[in-house]
Length: 430
Image 1 (spheres, rainbow, N blue to C red):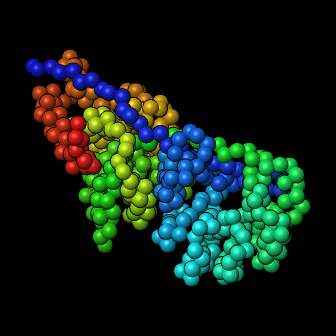
Image 2: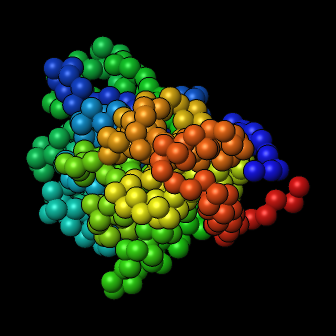
């Protein structure tokens, strides 16, 4: 073989994501829930420039997908702020009632539509909390029969107003949560007055939790929504499209591994993950991701690295097709595609694999243990590096004709190039 080339792998610019959590305590000072709060960096403060819808969607995606809700809340309920727009779009229904408390922000207009929706949530088994509740509107009487918790700003609400709120809560059998509890005296007073839950700096400040996510393209989400919107989605077309997006594939696997969905059997392919999650559940998550990505493109992408993930996945699969290794076909693309995930995320592969419900053979291959999948991956990497002696040796082990490999590699590269140009949000002017 002539014309040997070296392929230098560049480190990707990863996207670091953040969520703050603040514990909520009971009268025994035990943590019974967490409030999840938007943070755009490691600074423990809210950015007032962020749109409310965007902040909540970021919290949802980062908590339930990128970081993992079990890591954040240890399976305790999570209070999540919902804007009027997200309530109207029925976003709370994307979750199980035991996982979240729907916190209705004080900015939400208590219209007839909203009150009816809160009643629907109540009937579905969701707990509803009213944030920064004050008795300054006649509309509150219509919503209180469907509310479980009133959050009272203990620092800024007058004693007269608190007394009126406490009487109202007792009348409607609603629990009270004292927030912004700053001192032991505040806590003891709130407990004496019958408050059930407590939150504030007296206990602890919010803790910022961070993780990384793989960059993604809004175009991909829009196309997936389109494919899912037909009466009978074509799972083969859907699978092929998702396979083209490294970020979406990674998120899909993490969704499949949430506590509420976690499969009994290990997942071997994107198709299997789609079948396990189901079209309806997948549509919900893709919708959330699409909302979140509908903002100006800002993160610099390492285009060559993402493209290389696609080349590896396609090359591994093409080899199994060419040489009729049918028992490896489902797992081969997944192995190749995820082989650079540690570089993309800047995390050890062992840590990444803890969050993904992958087949044991795929995990072993990605950890560097020798099996048939790791041999496929190794010969693909050898092709990248033009390491022809290794290609010859591995071709002999795999019992394949090495003369066909350059053709397959060119096909894989051409496929990845086409996919990348199709899904790229815009061409760089530089």
